[in-house]
Image (cartoon, rainbow, N blue to C red; front, side, top):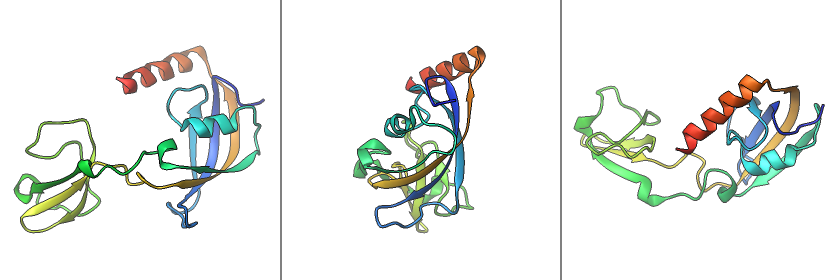
Length: 158
């Protein structure tokens, strides 16, 4: 079987930054439905189209092909009083306490007794990324799975 539209693809991968430093510990695995459903970067999907189990490749993706450029306007400083007592860098919030929800996910990057610094950028925004990929498994999707994936993609698109 080859990768084509509506084939489930299981890939083992590793991520590196442009200096070759691993961005995550060890190998990871993910499964997605091939065919433009938005669960994988388009350049990754294009590179895997037509390939078979066992295929390996290395892809270099620029920020515009992954998580976008870093956007300084997504940095917020908020009063400490609106946050839980047990607060530490790395915690995430679906909005900035005290502000109207804006659909962004914010990560605490720093805090003092009076203020919290939050970043709405993806942690890998602005970075070129190197993917090392190996196709582990392929299988045809059922009609029900295809419908469910279309619904998920449509819901995420808004």
